[in-house]
Amino acid sequence: MEFPDKISIANLPTKIEKLEKFSLDNHYNIWIKRDDQTGLEFSGNKIRKLEFAIKEAMDENADVLITCGGIQSNHARTTAAVAAKVGLKSHLVLRGNEVDVSEGNLFMDKMFGAEITFVSEDDYTNNRSEIMNSIKEDLSNKGLKGYILPEGASNVIGSFGYINAYDEILSQEEALGVIFDAIVLSVGSGGTYSGLFYGNLLRKGNKDIIGMSIYGTEDHFREISTNLIKDIGKFTGEYFDVNKKDIIVNDKYLGLGYAKSTKEEVEFIKSFSKSEGIILDPVYTGKAMYGLYKELNDGNINKYNNILFIHTGGIFGWTKEARSLIWK
Ligand SMILES: *Cc1c(COP(=O)(O)O)cnc(C)c1O
Image (cartoon, rainbow, N blue to C red):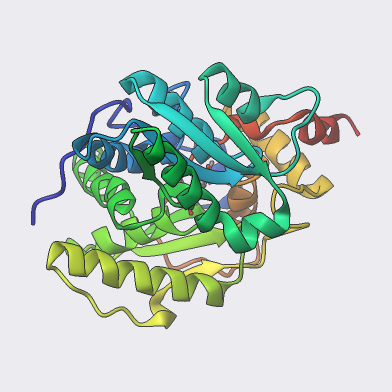
């Protein structure tokens, strides 16, 4: 099977390291794949998806990349950064109000010259496609071509980023002399998870792909992922009929909800940083690693020899509000 073409912007392959102290403390072999180091401006998992999606946009002669997300969306920031890099414009539809002092991802969106439309929670939930379509139409009236990326670039073309990453992991296993029998990652819109899941089916990998939801229930992701995996199959011709119950997305670690942290989560992230020299973000990877830690300690995960955790990035999620919890 041939993958679609992509542009090459990310620093790949990202390295895999063993979490020495965390493994010792938890009596387990836990490794981490540093997808937080795919680059500075476009750090994290989204760039892998965008390498494929933006190639498609460029092939279609797009002038403007249109996408959406929360006000601190990593995906929106990555889109703005890549647009600047490849000489396109970007227009972001962000959920929330313009804030006086913009920071984190919003600050970066502005640095990259993104045009931003702020919309209410309600409009975001119910009308974001219409809003993006009308932006595309306005552009078209001005003789410009817009290309719409869905939330998180979690569509078929974006998923190739992690089908590809799966192959990268297989070749790293060989180099390291390790077989990972489980891959654990944070799940937000489901594209990263579905790409890895599809890669595992395609290569008959026999790994458990375990998601930790930071937004949405297990049922929600069973629906999203089985559909996306079917759509990927229709696109590639290598079709897999996935049973919903094979999708493992743990929804026990949502905590206070999207982009809200509990004291325990923040304390965990702090102690993890101190022992490993690796910073996790409060919105995605901190919750996912905390979930993995809890599951290991509760004895719910114990059948694996080597677990690979994907660090999907998100450093700019340490906004003032999130940072303030560290001092409390
Ligand atoms: C978007 C994101 C995720 C989740 O990826 P999805 O493909 O949307 O499920 C995880 N971690 C970070 C840091 C992200 O920005």
